[in-house]
Length: 443
Image (cartoon, rainbow, N blue to C red):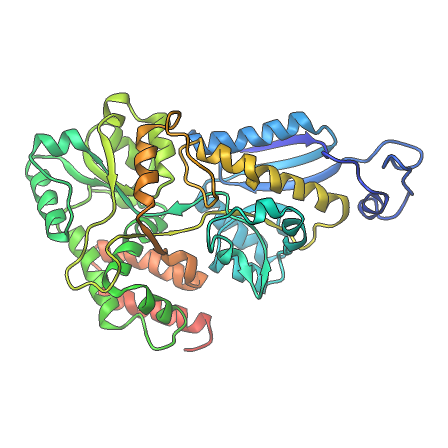
């Protein structure tokens, strides 16, 4: 999915910026035009993951279209990739130091790795020039994009990654209550299986899904957040510790109990949701981002009886029971190579996507934001109101792929697939431990 847009600057370029963009070939007049002719177009390459038909993706693409209509002098070369494809592509171009000018990226681990590779530039000066924008993010929202005191992006959404979406009508039909404990979840799974209903639809073809939407919360429920962060830093905890083995066993037990349909490693998230839309499963587990897809694409008879809950408590667990894994949300990264007029154009597009208007458009697309803005409940879908209210009393715990090194993320993603196919928890734990220790130089 590749589109080329011609867009324009909202404000007049200064002479120095134009000179920088044009390599100093021509001076500019007082109106910002190069002597002897019109401005040369500024070209920006932009990569994103807003490729779906969900309300969030539609809203973000509309911002790009509106920006296009308002600004006729910038040429945007835009490429949309699915999330897993974008992550893979970014890693590939990062290795070759060929980053696009602006691109969707993730906080914490990815941001730190790109900064370490000298691939990003901070946005502090631009952010500080708009204090009413900077100061309106929720507490700690910028932490995942801050490295050594410098800010490299701002979140465009809030991304809790683990909720149970359930069909109340199916629950009522078989006398199943919404599980509050792990034993109640196991009992619900057993009841649905006995009645020929898939308990939990799962699409783990892109192998990050189980890690992000299920295991990160299970892990926190069992080990607690402090243990996990110590293991990430290899400071007083290791992934071969008994706590982590127990967490892996909890997930393995889910698989062994036939919680998921056959073939879950061969279908993607969209196919997973189709199973739910068709009434073939009682539940699916996914992030807050799934709600925008539900609201736009689910059949009315399914959407009207869909509700959500967080994963239940686990006996003996050390984590906060009223929590769910997640991050503050994706942001737009700016390549270190962007300078002059191109940089000013990039900043304007960054503001359009993640400034107050962008945050409002995101919230109105049934997507949570890391920004202080009130939800108009009279206009929002009731299910999104339900999610918004749930999050007011729910803590965000770390999603594993936001904190672990790239090598350890790959190890755990592959390892969880192996685990659900009969692998040993101890083997998975050792692979994750070895990868993380090697990545931070403590092997």
